[in-house]
Every structure is written in structure tokens, then in C-alpha cells.
Image 1 (spheres, rainbow, N blue to C red):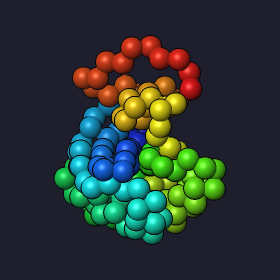
Image 2 (image 1 turned 90 degrees about the vertical axis):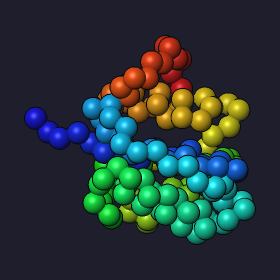
Image 3 (image 1 turned 30 degrees about the vertical axis):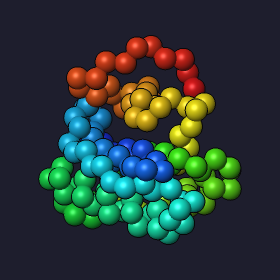
Amino acid sequence: MSSPRVYVAIDGGNSKTHVVIGDTEGNVFSFVRGPGSSPHLLGVPGTIALLGSLIGQAVAKAGQPAGQLLDRAEVYIAGADLPVEVDGLMKAVGEASWAREHRVDRMGEDRLPHFLYLLYYLTTTPGWKLFRGVVLRRLPAL
């Protein structure tokens, strides 16, 4: 049996950023809250630096080795609305080498709020299971 995949899920907002480290068995190892990570305020390099710092804190809090390459990064950033903005962040996240796989998307009124979308995505994508202790109602496919 293969070992569980370890991921980072990020909700980057204008006023705060949440980072979670968990695995495919449904374990949540750590949660870190930090300041806003808007690329409109910090620039893409500043956003990536802040996220990298928060991921480092979350990895340490989870008891994982520093610099560990995670299996997947799900990054949602407020204000990354245009395809060129998402593409720029997608490239920068890939270059940061936090995880073997990554996806960057935006959070907004047409998306499920905050971690609900992250939970939904991670629990309905093949290979990702429901977090222990979190019950989600059935949601429409996005």
C-alpha cells in the first residue's frame, strides 16, 4: 500500500492568508494564518515570498522535514482574476517548487467561499479523500 500524499492548501486573501498541510487519508497536520497575500499589493514575487514563508511555518508545525517537496499545492488567491494573472502566479508557484503538482485559481463571488472550495476539490478529485471530522453537503460540480 502506498503512503498517503501530502498537500498544502492555500486561501490567499487581501487581508489574511490561510495555509493547511494535510494528507489523502484525511489528516490535517497544521493550520497557519498570516497576513494578506494579494499580488496587487505585494507583487507576484512578494506574494510568493509570503506564501513560501507561511508554507515553511505550516510544514514545521506539522512536524515535516524543512524543505520537504509536497505532493500537491492548491493555491487560491483573491484578485487573481484575469487569465494572465493566474498564469503568472501558476508559473511562479511552479518555480517555487513547493510541490510536485500545483494549481492556482482565484477566489471570488462565483466560487465557493474560502476553504469550502478547497475541501470540495480535494475530496472529489480522484485520490483525495474527505477530511476527517468535516462533513460537506453534496455540492454541484464546478
